[in-house]
Length: 413
Image (cartoon, rainbow, N blue to C red):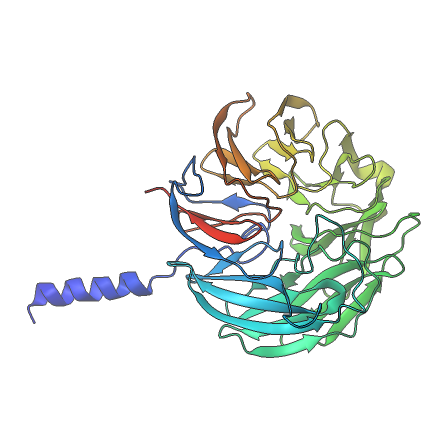
């Protein structure tokens, strides 16, 4: 074979083997909704800029994740002869959407299953991966780890709690530990499981005086002066824990319950929303100890605060969308509003940021793209014409969008 042909063949092999971009957990690599790439489409429809679509069996509002050219997600499938549900994990090829494997992880007995909220599903927490294992969580039903071929490595069902409206929050991985909050109606705790075995590393009860103690948030790991903190919002307080032993580091109180959004972090502060009935955005400095409610709450804003969608921190600006469709751009350091505009629809999914643009997805399946700037500018609007509550995954120039029945790969042609 000529030398030039050998070189070309070698380069082609490298290209095939080259790792792609990954979106390994809820809200992406940083857990804060940022995609570093470019050339994403601005507009789409059920037929425009659709690379492929794949029907997803059952029902689930977990968001897809992407790792090394494969997509992982969960669903709850009704059994044909009973009302029981098969709680499954599945893997699809990112290039073509073909189902590579599907595995039942748990079976839900319909006679014992608690009721869920009309906007919820029995498969709402998002999977996550460390590149070697896939971790799936079904709230009170249990947590499990699978290898990349779908073989179950371990299952954990010992940590029971009584859910209210079903499960919602997703675990995170910190130092080979799987950490999640379990805020039920009667029992509330934060727990760390060994990622390799599922055994309990630590379990810390929540200290809450809230009249309604249930919440659904996903924790965020942050670095404060070289030390990690697990920031976990719950009813009436956001609490930081030491990931090594689960000890409480600090807490900041507020009025709220049924807290859903994942916090974002920057400028030495975490930004979170305090939940139902009267959501408010809180900015809390993270360098305190003990109860820092009065000393470290930098600012609070109640107008157009989200109950469900997580926020975006982009430079000095904080972006949010309320459940009833009012988008906001705030000064992150002061809470002052640069703009607040109604963009239409109701919102549960969390937005993402890419290449100077913000993508907001409504429950009705419409996506509004606005410029990330101190002046409001709507760039595009698209409509899939199907209900969705799942947040996006974004990798390799493509948006993965889950509707009630389909998974789409949206990509500019």
